[in-house]
Image (cartoon, rainbow, N blue to C red):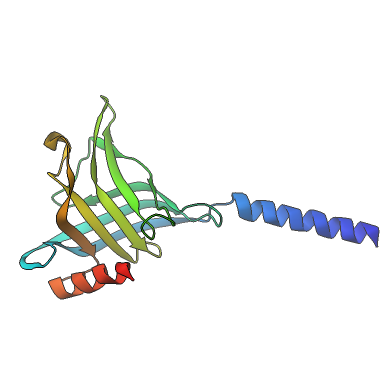
Length: 164
């Protein structure tokens, strides 16, 4: 009887340890149609493509993170490495930051803030302007990228879905 209790406790401890340490990785390789637009300005809509490739880590007791690359047709910086994105559950309902660094020199830039639903089923990005490494200091304006979307109404609906 005591041996059975001991084995049960050891088994439960090992299962708890596994759940606390394992990060439940998921490989992501997505290409989405996306809409880039300025908030409240349907005339500013530009159709772009969003590419997400890497691994999403979803630990039970820590914040999820993404290791890989997020790029867009007109915003691709192949000489820059993208830092891992940590999606903070308790900051702005899952906020993360897209940050690029140049491996050959101590330089980098923040592309913007990102939110996701699920395993990147829906994505909202608040782009910092001016965009790019040569832009110097940038800050958030009202430039948004929302995916997957093919038109302004769908993009706004997805964007507003993150606010709830």
